[in-house]
Image (tube, rainbow, N blue to C red):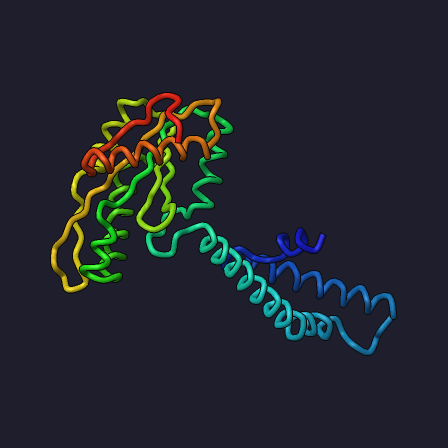
Length: 242
């Protein structure tokens, strides 16, 4: 009940703030007038109770609404932070799984891509972690631009990313995936131009398999892509075990 009341009273923005301020101040003014009528107070005129509502009630209401607005915005920020990877601003592992699972409950058709940066450890070891971060940001930007708006993109961990292509054919996924295996340009911390490639494991989703099963098969296909020379897309064979 308390949560519901806070959701109703707390403003979402400037317009909501003004509307609630006027309404709540009006309620206070009416309550004051009602009180004066009940006690038959003839010592204070109507203006006194109206002024009391405006100069005493309104500042208190404004303070309450300001605190509520701050809390709502803080909660939204914390919610976003809990679901986004702080470096790349992509979905984190948890939110990627949640969003993809909800999509699959409606329509299980799709293709999962598991992407991994080639020789990423060497980038960190040679150029430092700041350069490694720049590399990851460039990868995230390239992946996001290389897929459709309805597709789900996430950073699964480290240098590993995932894409769930909704209602996509194998041919469409092949075009998207092979485009993502092309060298991705970025700059080192000292502004030296560098590039990185991605190896990709792909799996065609089925109704019978869970999302965990799809990830296991995509991971095996990704492993094969690494063995075959990296910078390539490999599709998991039907029923291929992890």
